[in-house]
Length: 95
Image (tube, rainbow, N blue to C red):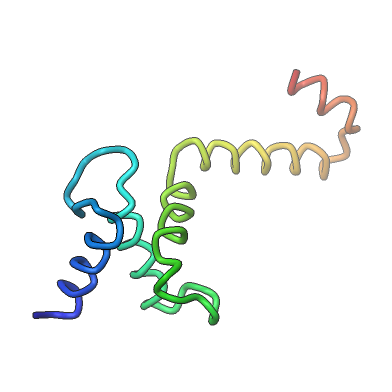
């Protein structure tokens, strides 16, 4: 069996869910994303396989449209402040 199959089976056992479940809170899929991040070296050096699900949930959040809109809003505010607008004026635009 391949390492990928071993990883998927481990995550399915640990989470009690299947990777191909399409519900919104799929911890097995989150674990797979976290494991891929760890194996690609995109995670902190002290990150272990026990943290795959938590890292995957964070990755899913960062990929969400809501998170991207939030990031765009923060950039807009930063640009407004850097252009010389007063904080009070920026607050008035934001409501």
